[in-house]
Length: 112
Image 1 (tube, rainbow, N blue to C red):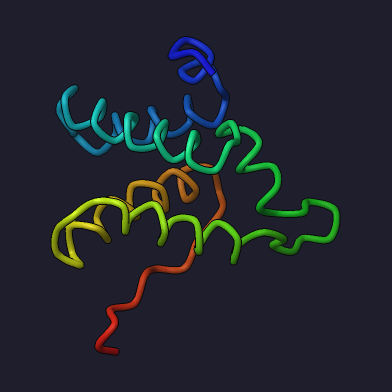
Image 2 (tube, rainbow, N blue to C red):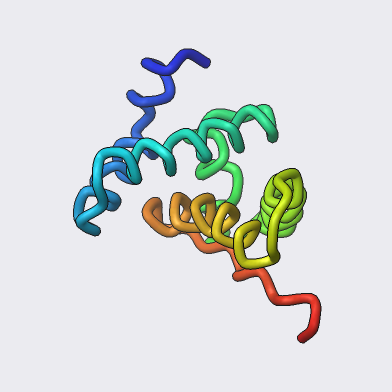
């Protein structure tokens, strides 16, 4: 997926609008979009595909929430650093889903 194709996805546009409303700098927004693009490559899906397949609109039930929760955990674990640094990376992905009306559970610390 090219950078242009990524940026024109409807779900990415919703996420950009959400980020703009938070008062983030352009650099902060771009960093979050880069993390999202890396995650899409990691799972081999487009942003639109991820949002479409996590929730079944007909049955009003989540379908692949555990799949994406596990992938977010794996994706976050790829970087060195503290638990909070890795969780912050995963929270970028969670915020993308939230901006598109879907929710992934928060990561719980290992000590809980």
